[in-house]
Image (cartoon, rainbow, N blue to C red):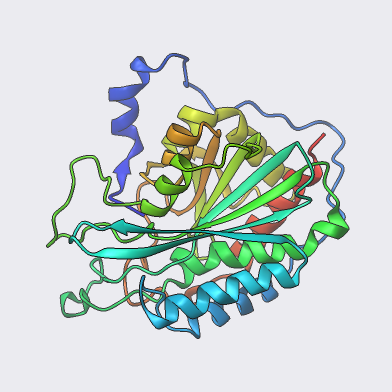
Length: 327
C-alpha cells in the first residue's frame, strides 16, 4: 500500500473531470428475498494460513523466505485441484536493484469462458518505515495483514468453490513486488510507479489467448483487528457497479457492519494497473478507517496476533455470497 490520500480532497478536485457523475452512493442491488450462500467461510482456517505464511519469516523479494513461501502458495493451490501457473520476470526497483518478480496464478474451472478474478499481493515490505519507533524503520514487515491475509482468504475461497459451484470460473492472482515502493529516505517517483511492480508487469504482459475476467476484486489488508472497509476512490472511478454489488453482497451475508456505506481513501494499489493496462474493471477491498490505513500498516506490529477472525470472516463470506449470486 502506498501513500494514503484523503478521498474528500480528491473528490473535490477530480469529480468534475470524470466522464460520468460519481456523486451519491453506489446503487443498492439487493432484493426482498435473499438466497444465502450455502457455504460458511472458515475464518479460523484462514488465520492458520496467515500464521503458516508468517512462519517462513518476512517474505522480502529475493530472500529464502520469499522463495519458500512462493513455493508453498503454488503447492497449496495445486493441492486444492486448481490449475496453477507462474509469471516470472526481473524488475528494476527504485534503488536500482534488479529483483526477481514472481506472480502466481491459479484457475478454478479453467474451461469456463465467463470468469471473475480475485487479486492480492503476497510479499512483505522490507522496511517498517511507518513504525512509531524510528529505530525499527529498517526492519522488515512480517505482513500478516498487508499480504498474508489476502492469500489466506483466497485459499479458503478456493477450498469452498467445488461445494459453492458458482456459475463462473475464478482466476486467483497473487502479485509480487507490490510493496517495494521507496521509503521516505529513498528515491520516490512523482507518479508512485515505484509501487505495484508485479501487477504492472502482469497487466502489460497478458497472453494473447487470455480470457479476461468480467471484473476483478483486489484484497488488501483484509484481516486487521478493528478494520472496516470504505468505498475506495479509484474503485468507484473504474468499477462503481462492482463496488455496489460487493457492498450489496456484504449486506446479504450479514457483514454490513464491516462494509461501511461511506467514502474512504484513494489508494494507488494493484487494482490501478489492472484497470488502466489490462482493462479489467477492478475494485479494491482495502482495510482501514475512513481516512487512514490500519495502525499496523508498514510497522513491525503487522503480525498474526493483530489479525481478527471476525474481519476475515466478513470478507470471506461476502465474497462467497457475491460468487453465489453470479447469474
